[in-house]
Picture 1 (tube, rainbow, N blue to C red):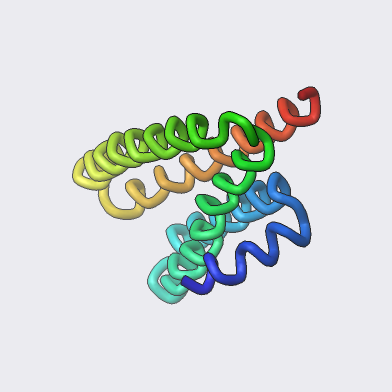
Picture 2: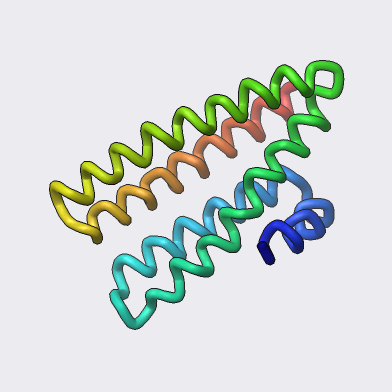
Length: 130
């Protein structure tokens, strides 16, 4: 909740793409930190949630800004894709967790964070060329 309340202020101040990228990087580091450092650092998972909670509303605002005339269509597509990828990703991460344990399962979430960082960099490049 706190991330969604404060996240908009942060995103408006530093920019939407930078906000998405920084939140993805920080949450990825926090997640890997929680996995690698063990039980004494379990609070890092909660801090990860703060940064993750900023990304979805920021993505929607970015869509509205970049696709003003087609925002509803693009948002509908993005939200549908997010839901589908979340469902598939959760299933895969659950299977990894069952097969190799919680640490590897949570580590695979960190890999998703790395992929997110790369996709935000790609998006940034595309928007600059646009």
